[in-house]
Picture 1 (tube, rainbow, N blue to C red):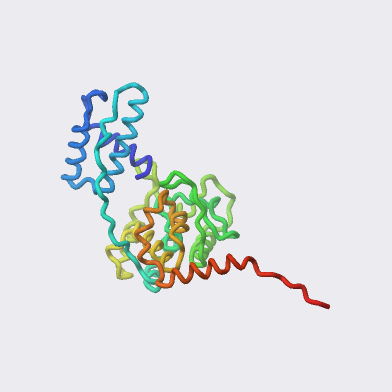
Picture 2: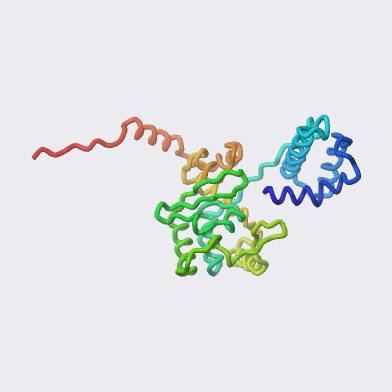
Length: 283
């Protein structure tokens, strides 16, 4: 969850639950009862429950630091084990079929997502100032991990951005200058979201391609599995996806190529030999 979504959840769901109670009177049992009711109503998955618990814990830690209460009521509440479902995957041909199911500019947005694994919010916040076609990279300045990152582009991503740049045409730079401004509108929280018409186009296009249940976020997993199958080391994949922990990319380890150890050996061999020596000819 992003900071804005966490704030919205805190203001609209969590805090009204404890309305009428003084902060110092909230106990661990109150927090546990709140989380249990949310899960029973199917409002929270296990992973979301853990994130909400962390958010509430941070809130109460601040209250403790400001001497509004003696101890954090979230302390001691265990996190639940999060189910790790098998990430979805489309082979290269299927990815091409999906991209071809759309017209620009949505086609470019789908192709770039498959090529970079950007989250939807990151894609919609992408500004032309963050695009460097010369170095074949895009810079994600606002991400879930709160840290900016640079993501490399393959020829597919370059083509998507080049086509979008051609659609944009030549005009004086503006601030901001979103790459996919025509696809989005702001939500109540201020975060960018796809226009309803674009959502409908996405749902119709994925159905035409033969993937009616594919979620937009699934394309991020498709990118990650594709990278793992291509032999991208998990450490590099973590940086490309913007995860703070290597644990988050372990789900893709099973998709590493069968000869990954041979590839690792070859890289070590090349490193040990050092850069190629240039020998000047004898005249």
